[in-house]
Length: 120
Image (cartoon, rainbow, N blue to C red; front, top):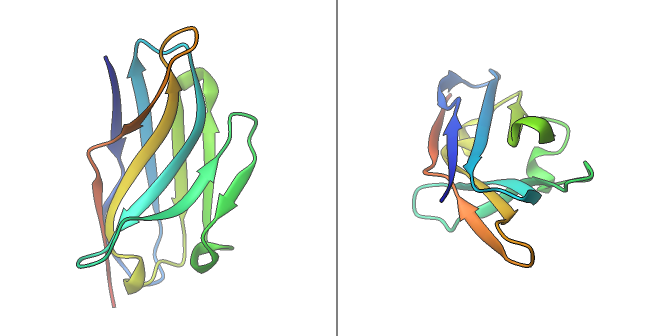
C-alpha cells in the first residue's frame, strides 16, 4: 500500500504565499517523477509543475517565476512554494507520483487534494 498525504493548503489574500507538501509512504522501491496538479471549479485538472528524480523541473507558463517545486528524496516528499498568488490560482491541488513498487512494476498515485483559495 502506498499513500500520498498532502498538506499546506488554505485561504490567502492575493499577493500572499503558501507552501504545499506531499509525503509518500508505504512499500516504495523508488519514486520517479512527482508533480502538482490543480483543478479549478468547472475546469479540468491541469499540470502545474513537475520534478524528476534527478531534480529537473517543468512549470505551467502561468506559474513560472512564482511557484517553485522541489523534493526531498530521503523523505519521499515533494514541495511547492507558491508566491504572488492570484485569484486564478484557486483550486484543489493534487499531488501525483510515479512510484516503483516492485522490481519492474511502477504505478501512478494521487493524493487526496488540498484546497487553495486566493481572495482578491
